[in-house]
Image (cartoon, rainbow, N blue to C red; front, side, top):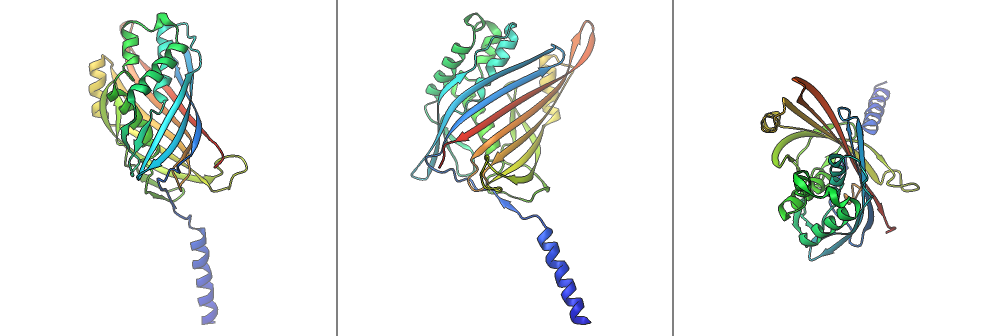
Length: 300
């Protein structure tokens, strides 16, 4: 009888261990020679203006490794023609160019070491925008504000860090259990109206899945991220901009290879809620921005 009880307890413990989801460890190890075509899209939904703005960028990405340094090289940037009737909407659409990943070296922890030929990246963006955007739109204070997002090495690097570190630094060297939420670290700042704002967030691994049709069922992992910027900093920005209030939140879904951290898909939904004066009253506006990167790799 005792033997039966021991065996039963042992069987239950074994079953419980088997039912416990296994950890997945994420390692940054981009393979040399990896090549991808990247399609980046940006959609802005603003009910107040009654408009939905969409735009798309395409570029190629190659990974090289030498002397322990991993380098991301991007080229062949092009933007879909932008034909928005309102100049403000057209310039909003042109901001899809900031989703371009400029050539850069990567640190071991998933950060940006340094930009490689930032002048070349700026010229690539300027050329792509000039081909997609009517010339008469590329003038005036609104244009200066938009083009400022890539017109200097500092601006270009800030944009690259924000994107690359979200995809890499937040996950590098982490072990996640499906369904278990953990505090996010790594990329801890956000650029809002040119101001660096600290933010807190969480990460959760949802599941394993194929990276592409016909692939191994567990080669990729889907991870969700949620970040909320510091409310006090947003309040200061709102006051400087003449807004009654400003709230933001960012929800991202990343499909990546845990063994390399090569991204396959990343979608970022940013919600902005702000109050503006309209006709002597205050109106609450909610704007949704959806940015999506899709990476299609050559067979390797």
